[in-house]
Length: 307
Image 1 (cartoon, rainbow, N blue to C red):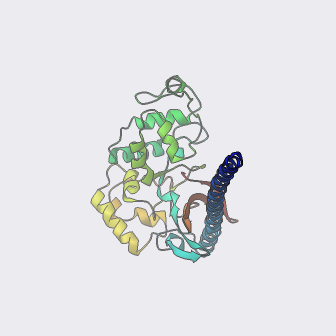
Image 2 (cartoon, helix red, strand yellow):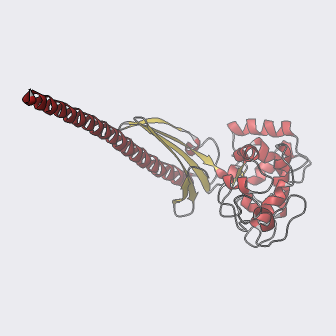
Image 3 (cartoon, rainbow, N blue to C red):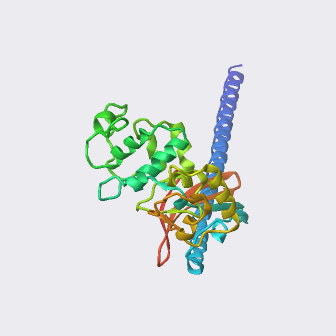
């Protein structure tokens, strides 16, 4: 009888051990399967990232060939055509270029000399008015860019305002590095920044507006007396025929009887933004690359999710 009890206990222990081993084995198998999925995902992400970076080579070649072929940039050129989804190993890659000089460069407001550029200031005021945004937002930008702690009237703000926020921070007192940085400025909301984004950029140098790629809203900033319907017509004509020079642009009937300041206008662009996207299996990578084109080539000067 005692022997049978011992055998029963031994059998129970054996079953418990077997159950424990089974649980451990299943858990290990699940972990291994998870690790395999995670490794596959990481590999796909890396592969997608490499394809996105590879898209930069495509963009650089397109832009350099364009510069060698013509000194005028417009929407009918090859660089302006979207790269359709292109099959690559394991997925596809797509991308397109945007001429950032078709937008208003906010850093033009405060050149490195430290004085507000009056032409840029007036144009930005007109842009704010078109978008039904407060003109006082301009004051906040100027105080963010300038090196002093003097608060600009109405909408300005310096350290004494930003240090009261939670968490506290200081005015940058330097150029903006991205449009999204505007969200930090006094008076700005995320909705306001989203409203501005299609029409503005931040570039490290003073740049001119390319009249061949600028939107209706940006062109309307050139003078307070412009008629929107005439600018709309100009844009329709521009889709068929670009302007070879600023002089010819200013001779258009839309500007008849209007004194237009040609300062900071151009038909040639140096800064472009590449939007690249790669899909590998279930992995997806989007990347923005800021490209600068010069006399000797094209360079990547910035990368990120927001620029």
